[in-house]
Length: 392
Image 1 (cartoon, rainbow, N blue to C red):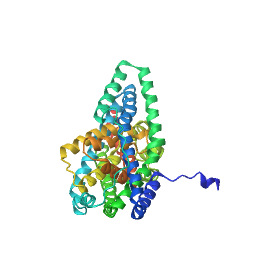
Image 2 (cartoon, rainbow, N blue to C red):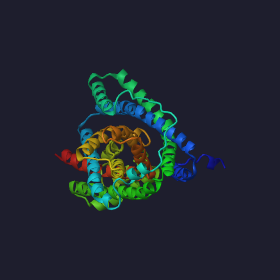
Image 3 (cartoon, rainbow, N blue to C red):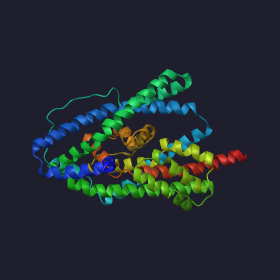
Image 4 (cartoon, rainbow, N blue to C red):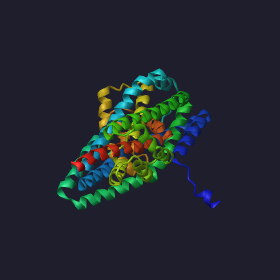
């Protein structure tokens, strides 16, 4: 019995339970109870707005300062390739989603149903203004991080490291455990309004789209890496299948590092390159998570009939690629680091942001799976580049 008591449900399972219970309860819940849930939604959304700039300051700043201490040609090369791969995955998702989703999603379907449905107001609202907006936090993080590098401000670096630990603890112990509750209350409200059927029907299609696009992007990555490294891309991709399945199961890029490293070595990559590239990429290469976030946000914008010009989306992708550097230290970190960008750049409201979070977390594994498999492609390229330099 003690063995079973130690087993804790995963975040994925909690989200599925929250969606199911919320959808069912919303059909029979009295309006007074739904308004209680709405009150929690509004308060939690305010807390998220408050903490996101602090997350960027507390995690991106020490990440930049830490990179500077170990700066070298190989490091800069890995960072450049990882960032380019991450933002290209966002544009790849945009091009594909914009052309595919209109075939099976109805523009404005949730917006129309929400307008016709019952409106639930919170019993009270508590405004918690953030200390600064997300763009100010990003710029301040770069200024302080670079300043620490060039001035060797060890005390300031230590202070931001400790501040980052506080932010990580807050996210892991408070925000992430409350996310399923937030999703439950939001789904319950949508069920009471009568819009849940459209969301669930569209949700399966959106998640399946994300999985297919992430696999297609991996094929493109390995074709390019195979050409550079002069190796069979499909054989190299197959050798990474264990890493893909492991990350899909445990929903973590960092925890999969040993498996990813072993798979990368099967592709003939030098051990020193693997030992350097794979752990580093697990913290800076977020192509799968970006595809998952992009597909979810584009779909929500479409079914809510929110205009999304390409220039606005491009702004979001470039900023999200930077914010994602802070993600690996926190469970669900890419999502948490991007919440502020969804609202400040793409113009999403709390309801749209909550739905993106729901779709993102409903099947979390395929994002990290794509991330770690893509790390193997970057290792192939780095091995090829520095092998040539060593020979010269």
